[in-house]
Image 1 (tube, rainbow, N blue to C red):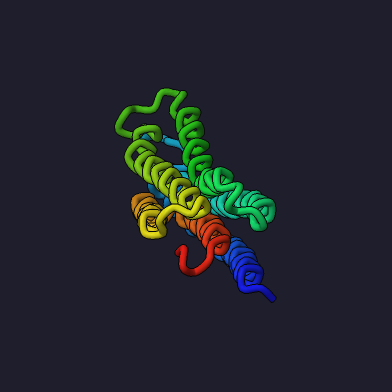
Image 2 (image 1 turned 90 degrees about the vertical axis):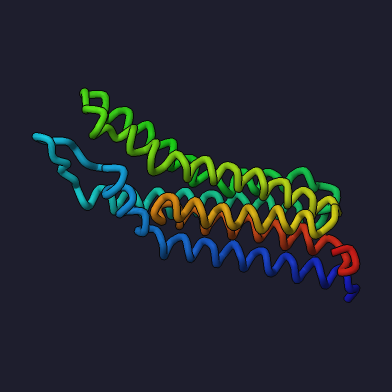
Length: 219
């Protein structure tokens, strides 16, 4: 078997296993955001006589379904892109940017959904001090902005690597993107951890395919 073919096959195998591991980790961590949703964003809660009354089961179900569902859909979409690019990664470098975009979408969609829910919940005339929108701006907006930045950096890294640009520059961008996903999880009190893990798995899978398209001396 030619070294180039062997290298590409190894990259494909590693990418698929990375996506599978990401899906499993996302499912196992699906309930982690419950504390963030309820304790910090008052999701599933109503203000009664000045006190928040929360439905515990609502937060748990929402956390599990949204995190695992969105993360799983993103990983599935990335798997399709990986399959469509793994034999011609050099010629389809521009498509690797979509991997990064899809990777961070679950976290961004979840944050946007929480904002809409907070706006609806505050529509009945909640005081500013108890406003869920204010809670979102303080405890979710920063995580969303950091995640979006991570997606842009990851997209740049994957396109550079697939296009044969210097490995060092691409790797620095990749490492920065993965580090920002961790920062976003910390900023959200681990609320974006499951979707962040899914994003990291998708980005790493794309990196494996992009790197596998080039011989070792070009890395």
